[in-house]
Image 1 (cartoon, rainbow over the protein chains, first blue to last red):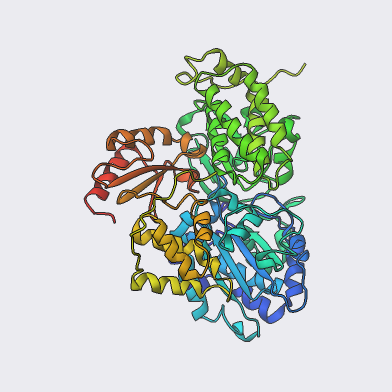
Image 2 (image 1 turned 60 degrees about the horizontal axis):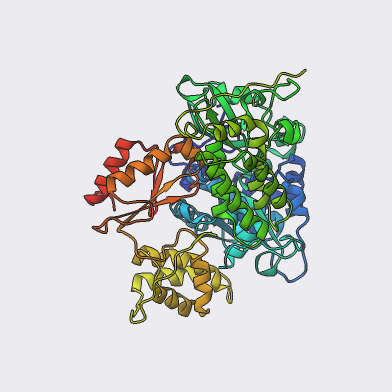
Length: 447
Length: 176
């Protein structure tokens, strides 16, 4: 099927969450291939060739991240899977883990082998406790079949795999906060450097990868890095899970070939089938709540009139002026009835709630933005509040230990940039601000 | 900052963990290397909360004793993460996701409806001790909203009618 290619190919097969059906569908063949015919370096090489980029949101090349891992003698190395999926709009990892848990486990074993780790962890957000139970059952099955534990498939390679929950904190998706949390502490991000590749879990060299990145290693080893790189366009290779939500006719998780047009993704029969209830598209946040919002006329076309594609590069085309980011693939769509001010306030409240409180610009700034946006939304705003928001924004951005500050600042900056007149209308019409909707904004006429 | 509520302290409470809890906790500790047992802390808080409904100071002290760490190390973690209840809660805690994607499909209206139906505000517990209503930030089910979480269960694609039926099922004990 068009929207089920490499990772989700067998997702609808009954019983695929169990090891027998998974193996029958060709599961653990990549692991056999790697352990019997490939060295760890060969696996790293295939991942480098594949062009796979981190699927958690940052898009950093996975093979390069792996090659940074320090390998001092006599010190254990760790692979940690980031399953703390909590970027608003993103629910792809949960889908993958729930439906086809052995794909992640096989990917974990392959990746651990490539990195020389003998102990690996999956850190999953605490709210997904039922998914943790699914993973633990699958891990027990993998031990019973000899895919985990001592001397895996007679190769002499040993690996133990543990899944452990968080307790409810968006910040733990940031890799150093995740490691703190995994050590049983508050999720306060660490100052970098040192990077986890040098000093990570318990001070040892550690790689932290997203669920989807690790799962993608399975088809990369099976088909080869070149075959994976043949899918996609330019530096956006392979397939990507997109979790589509908001006012869509058919929201859900889709596996797309990178390079698909945004038009096809939103309106195509194999994908989201257009806006719900026959309404019009107002705006789109294409990569999770942290990325800039795009008004309707910049969603399917770039500012220069080219087709917008689902790639890291095309979604970013135009920079902050007219582009956004692929991010985590959390694709949020707004119909004509939605209020941009209310949504911007909602996201600001989210970041204020989730700031760990370590850095003053983020701790204070996210709270101020939330308050200012709340008063605009509730009909008590002043015209100078719009510039005040921009000012707070600048003081947060780049002044914090981790990217949460930027993630909080960008959506507000982009919303004001594209929808300034809607903010002004809210301030000028306080009695109507919550009862009547502003509607679509017009595309500016280029002189 | 995640939590603002102050832990309730009853100095006379004597906490004894049940055999099944002790068994679960011993299993969790075994998952981590020696001297790294503190990594089991968050899971232990989940286990204790499943048993008691919320985390009292004496329960947290007992966990500290079990892990051979200072009590403050447990408090600072329990107060950081939003899933842990530091005050008594109702038998069923309904946590409704209120973040952007859920708001786009009606979470505001859903929360208001539950407030009216149960005659409580967000953060409060019904007088019969049956329900506590809370809101949560993004629960990671954005395509299936509006939704709420109750203990380990996600209830998705909710409507006013569905949430009414759900509350009745919890009330009648049809769902545990």
